[in-house]
Length: 274
Image (cartoon, rainbow, N blue to C red; front, side, top):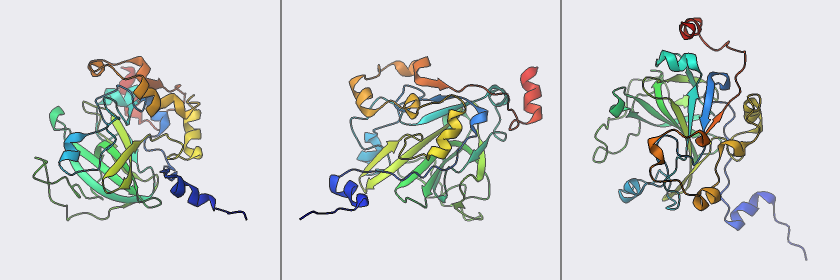
């Protein structure tokens, strides 16, 4: 007697935690991006296992203790006109999928330029969250929502009451990247259960659709592996503890520039040539 098992049941039986391909739109237009940091690289700062949050009972971080001393998100360094402008109202930030705003909290206090960290929960897969950093969020949306507890977060604010909606459509402009003293970055967080969460790459084949990744291929990003260090590779090749003090070329992928500058405001192009 043969036992037929539906394919969708296999991941459950095997204990494999898969993610839906929820990213069906870019969050920054690739034509406005010069470089992208690699997942599990040494770009920026450590962003992975966080025992401080976990010890406080806040599990919405990477909970795998082996994922240490690595950046489990992607920084997007915009093209020169945007970097030169150092503004917070020129580079559009798009919702990478349809969903609802799950959290809005302040960040950027150390730089002197306070902006928003915006969490979007996917409608298609409620266990997937996109975390967008350093956003000048449109006032259509709450400026504070589901903030970290006041006892643990000195900048805590109560939920905003003066906003239009929390829902977002895929590709919708939700605000602008705040480029005053920083660049833009994005993380993807997957919930396994109430005490287990893991970061995934924005470019992971289980997260981003092939149609969206094809847009990056136009800029010579031929393989998703070009911007992802695997967990096995990074664990076998740990980063130096002091690598955060400098910028390393091996941590970045440079997109091929194109002649298409249609998405860049004319005044920005003029400024870049002066």
